[in-house]
Image (tube, rainbow, N blue to C red; front, side):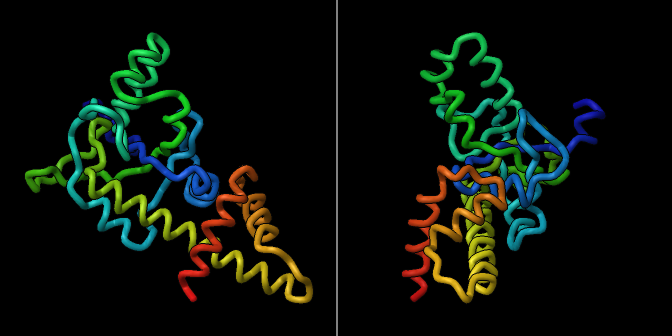
Length: 199
């Protein structure tokens, strides 16, 4: 491993729900960029430090079709393969340019836990473990819906003298977090379901 890899933050690509991505990039993305995406920092979110200490997978090229996470090395290989033969990449790994848009680069700590319980440097070959990826996805979803809830409370206070539909609040949230408005309706439906479950 080169000295440069130690200095640059290690990343792993995580599958993130499309309508959450705008908020994640807006709120958690820093100044570092990878493939036109801001590198996402999650270590300050509740439960994230513990999740990043869970067992990782050191399978740089994956193990069959891509799953919930992709190592940086594998992601680079997929991109290179698509430039040469996108059909073979899709047949072999189920990856297309469109499907890779579902993944965001997550900043990882300096060390990772291997399957044998040993701490090793988190290199570009390390992938999130299966349980680890699911836990981090849940942490991001919870942080997102908490942000929507906080925004809804503020919106209600600011518009307490007016009647408004929930979609108005969701559209305002989308504008304020650089989320494409095409996701406003699915967000509204999920938000309504969550409100009903809480009653």
